[in-house]
Amino acid sequence: MRPTRPHALALLCAVALCAMATGCALFDRVEGERKPQLTWKQAFGTDGPEFVDATRPQLETIILEIGHVEQPLSDMSLIDLLWKEVDQIGSLEIETRRELEDNGIRVGVTGPNPPRILQSMMEVDLLWRRKRYETERVPDHLQRVSIMPGTSMPILVSDGYASCRVEVPRGSKREERTYENAKCVFRVEAEKIQEGWVKLEFIPEIHYGANGLRRVASEDGWQFSDSQRIETLYSQRFTLTLNRGELAVMTATHCDPGRLGYAFFVGDGEGDEFQRMLTVRLLDVVPAREKHTRER
Image (cartoon, rainbow, N blue to C red):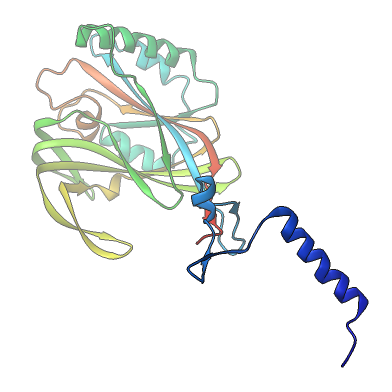
């Protein structure tokens, strides 16, 4: 019989002493059977220690601040002054800017420090909203939203119209159409270019008609969604590149009923008294890693 090696015997004794001292067991015995102890979640109330799977790409979230500013049509002086401080030339290609202006949409970009005129407009907007709603508490004109790169989200621009007449761009011509139960929306798609820089694509849409079960395309194939009909105006889409803190500004070029910009930012031509302005600020791009636990 081979003698037991001294160091092996010492190791076995150390293990036995530890088990006796702590009173721990790797398994509980119930009726002679082995049963695992409590899981991490049962013991500590969490999903377990978090770890990062290096094989998965890091996810990020783009944080935007959406602003809706209203200005009385009886006093357009502030909007006229604002466009003297907004870059309309460098933000868009010349042909895109001209086509948007022909259809009544004005687009520009400001730096991280908002123009003084824009701050004044927001103060006027608050007073104007209090007058319209006849209350001290009015809806906030700023809203923070999150969007994942490579995805899109809708931004509601106009109020709902019982009936809305719009000259829809069709190539070099316009086709006059009337939409019942309509609202104007920008669908925004986001893409991170590099650290601190994001590209946003704005696609005008007119949602109209009654809600109904409709077939829509998705990454997993065709799905059904309870929604209105959508007129997507791809010819009027435009792209803006924003650095962290910069602000995109959009409104109507003039009050011309029937133009696309009028439908988005003024109204349906039936006694509207204010002009809307949409602002989109890039606040930040932050990590948004998926959480994986050791119990998966």
